[in-house]
Each structure stands twice: as C-alpha cells, then as structure tokens.
Length: 553
Image 1 (cartoon, rainbow, N blue to C red):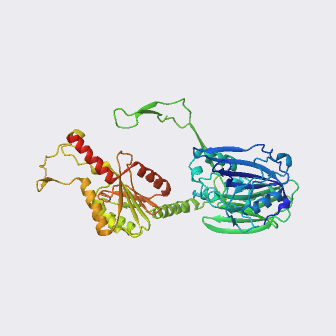
Image 2: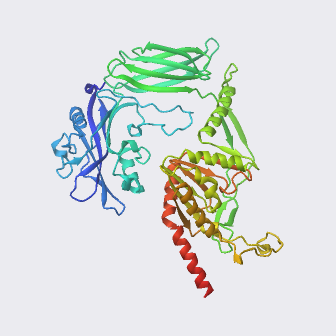
Image 3: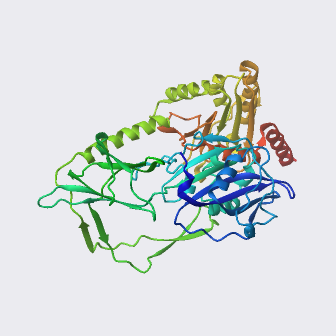
C-alpha cells in the first residue's frame, strides 16, 4: 500500500492531444512520480512544450508541474470524474493560468491494481529471450519503483501514433514509446520509487583456501532512513530447478555474507518492508565468471566495392566497404572457471532445441518436400476452412486455377475474400524464348477451338470468379497491381499471415516452406496499402480491352 509519509514531493508529467484550437485537450498519457525524501526537486517548467501532428491540425502538448505529495495523489485519484483539469503547481509563483487548472478530457478510468495497492514491475532475466514485455513500465527509469495505473480509452490517437515526430516528442518527455506501449494511451500512472534503499550491491566472492564461494550483499539506506524491518528472501535456481529458498532479516549494518560452496546456478532475491511491501526484485541471474578478449589490428579503411542495385543496364549504383582481413594478434581469458564440473551448458543446449521446436510449431513452420502438391493443397484448404472473418490472398501470379483449388473451402456466410494479384498473372507464356536464355523449343501449331483462339488467362480468371460465386456463394473481390511492386506471396486468414515460399499454383510441386509471421499487423497494413494502389479486376479488364483496341487501330 502507498505510504505518503516517506516522500517529499511529486512531479506530474502530462501530455494531452488537442484536436482543434480552443478545444479541451484529451489525456494522452501522464505520470505522477513521488520523490523520496532527500532528493532535490527539479526546476519548475515556465512554459509548455508542443508538437504539431503532421498536417492533421492536431497538437500534442506537454507540461511538467511540481506538487506536494498529497495534492498530487488527490489529483491522481480525482481523474475521470467528468470535471477534470490539468494540475495546479503547489507554489503560486509557478502557476500559469494559460496551462494550469484548465479543462482536459479524460475517459472513465480503470484501476490496476485495486487502489491503494501498488505493484512492482517484473521484467525478464538478463539472458532470457526477449518476449516484448521486457519492461512493463519503462517510464519509471532505472531505480526500483512500485506503480499504480489507471487505464482509459485507447481510441482516437491513430493520427498521433502514425506521426514519428509526435511519438518521439512524447517519448523524450514521458520516457515511453506509446507506439510500442499502446496500453498506456489515454491513461495515467503513479510511480512510487523505493523510499528506503538507495543502493544494493550484490556479487560473488571467489573461493579461498579455507572457504568456498560466497554471495555478498550490501544494502545502503537513503539519508534519514534505516534498515529496520527489512527482510531478504533469496531463491536459487540450478538448471531449471529451485534448489533453495530462504528469508532472513537484513542486519542494521546492511551486510550479508552467505556461504554457498560453489555458485554454479542462478541467484535472485526480493527485499520486503513491513509497511511498503515489496521494495525490489531481482530475477535469478548466474554470476559472470570469465570474459574472453580478442584483439585485432584496426586498419584505416578497406577496399570500396561499387555495385549496381539491380540487373537493369541503367540501374543506379551503390558503394560499400569490403571486409578487411587481419590476423589475430592477442587473445586472453580473464577469470576462473567453476571449480566443479556442471551440466548447465548441456541442459541449456537441449532446452534451446526444444524451444526452437516449440517456436516452429507456434508459427506453423511447415516444409513441403518436392512432389507433395496434394499434401500442400490439403493443408491450405484446411486452414481456409478455419477462417472466421476474412481471407486475403496476395500473390503476383494468382490466376484462375487456384480459385477452384482452394476457395470453395471458405465459409461464404461469415468470411470475406480479397484477392490481390498482378498483371504478371495474365501474361501469355511465350514460346521460342531463346533470346531470354531459355534455349530453343519446338514450335507448336496454335490450337483452336471451333476456329477460335483459346481463352486468355484473364477470361479464365473472370469465368472462375463467376463460377465460384454461383456455385459456392463466395464473392471474391479481386484487385490487380499494374506495377511489379509485390514479389512475395502471403495468405491472410483472419488476423494470421502465412508467408508462402511458392505461389499457390506450385506450392508443394517443388520443395516449399510456409510459416506464420510473428508480427502480422505490419504485413496486413502493407497489403492494405497495396490494395489502394491496385485497381479492381473489372477495371483492369476494361483497360486491357481498350489497349488492345488501340493497338489494333
């Protein structure tokens, strides 16, 4: 729970988004940071910072004010009442009537956790694989701090998030990238730094002739504070096993020297206070025993290579530096290995293999060997049957045959279908292509049907679209890219994006790979952008017919 007696003041950092001039700004994000006793206050902010959001007419405003602890907490708790105003600095001489105490718009706020309880952000271990939640509250800085959050509506900030300058403006002043931490849009957070501990030292002491390895702790209190009542809970991890858990009082001098024998595992700790609860937490970390150094001579620039950026004869050129080879001159190793052999590396390698397999399964990594066309088709058909809202196929060579091969698996009552292809899909295959380097082929006589030329790929595509709608009630909206801006192939099913190594018309005929992308939002956004550049298939047909008429005349 929050105890305000241990703090000397508070800083409120407030960012608002104003849609139009003379309109109340809307809460973008704000923090209320309490200051431990003994910490000096920053100078007051005389004016206000602002950043226009592109050409939208919107503006982001930022204001920092200093308040007493109780006034800051009262402002924080009163937000969302419907009569919300920007905070007034406690000192009258620091107030500015243009910016302080003016109306701001705030949606209904939801407490997390329940007030007045606070939570300590828990990150990930030093050597853990980055999962995207490495620091759930980056705005607290490096010092341990507990937080309370009040979450508001995230809607209405799209223009600001799309503007790199506006996002960077907020990040520099509130220490959070709202494009990455979107949960904090329209919200406010209370930050309560550790009011008791100023510093914690934690390291391993190597073994000596008469003692084994030890873990040393040193706790330094803030000025005017004591270590009375503090407890240290330690937990040891050895190859994914919890091998020890112990709680003890922190002595008045703040020194703990704990015998371990051999420190081959990972070691974490939690410090608790009788009134404040958890003050700090350290995940289990192994101790760094050895560091290797390799020293190479540094050369003053190597060979510059000039290459074309494409295969066209008039392609622009670029330059880059070739690798500079130099012999190894010095290699050294600092530190001693563990006294006893351990199986940490063996277990870590096996766990890494399992993690790779789990990731491959999570992202649907699937290899189709040469000659597995039917298997590949059945797999794609099965995925399409699971679609609940949308299907999008983006393939520059998507033509008519694939409509019948796959799209009858889509449920027309719940799922929309969008096809994005290109003019490459409708080009006739040229024979006698020796000039292009494909060798000479036997010239075949053109085949005729009732003295009429075979239907074009475009005609077949149009016919199969109509047949799909007639027989399966699936209405597929087809779009054609006239320029060759799309190379790779993608299959979007609801909010999942599959990357296809081959086009759907050849998937599995030759060795092929498909995989679900870990960040589908980026690809979906890019494909939607391409749809805006494309034209409907009906308009494409009309343009092609007109071009043929013009060429004939």
